[in-house]
Length: 463
Image (cartoon, rainbow, N blue to C red; front, side):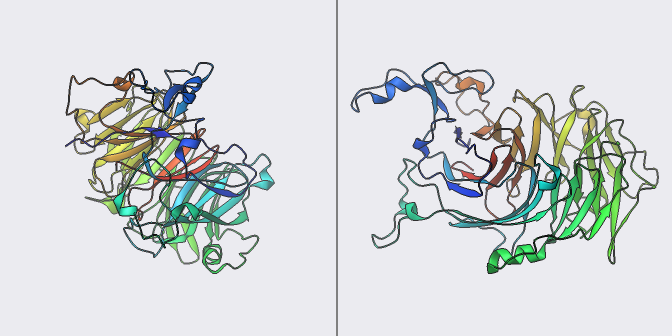
């Protein structure tokens, strides 16, 4: 049976100078960046008056607002939606795994994340370790949920406010990308716009969030690499071997890092050199055959490559797709954590494709050219093998289910609905310039997005 598809969006605070967490308690109050086009003058119509015809569904990148029009959210589209901001925008965010439970679905929720800033002045950049907690379900959303009905004596969820606690440390230069080690979340890697890669031990900051203590004002990296000839964005910790690490940069090379006592050995004299332009993303294979020794990379040269670190010739990829997206730069990729041979890639043309690495000659399994601006991030759902998320520079994040089929072809739909394919489960809007998204591996179907306008953490009604 096809999953129900709904689309919604929320406005994001515009003031980046305040450290705050906002609870979207009343979805209907947020009308600036919401979903259905309505005329502002019609809002004051009598309650008993019937609306004439279905409302038009907003199509991002196609429709434009006329004077007096605004976007309206459909109540009940989010189970949870909270927004946070720090002093400066962050290009990258990652989840710090915790010991609160492997698969949590009850409210309120708690998430630990790490992010790095892109400040106006280099000396103002920060590395943020954050605890987002008291994340209750979105209230006043127009739904009646019997499971949420408690005794009259219980405190209303409307009175709860989500909380953001943050411990910051100065960072040398802007942070292009940040990654936390899966096996030890307090070990964090950063790609700086200075061309250096740093490893940090943020254990004191992580513990200070729970104890309410002060964290060290400034910490020094436990390891720094200057082997790359240019800055970059691509890096990844191995999910299968603690400390093993990859870095790729604008110099078109990929370096393998091996953990050793006191730091890492960077195999800079033997880089992987198959790309002809900047390496945009790298990721270790998460599951399946040879996962410990296999990784994938994508590049501004338009290629997608799969490598085996046991291969002595580091110019030779085990799989090479030189024109993966029809000449467009390939910006991001993600290996499936459930079906180990699948990769999703996102490109500058706004498209994303799914590849089966066992049958690359057959072409992509799925090919969606739906977003109107470059894809900036992709991520597979951690427990649903057919669901993935895509962030785009068109100010939207789309959630997809590849198993969904149109179960009612030819049915009458509202104006604009034919723009949305059946596989598109949800369209999240309201953030300006989304940069990176991550499914939380321990919070059921919870997605985290960082954008130029701040952070969103949300759970939709239909996943």
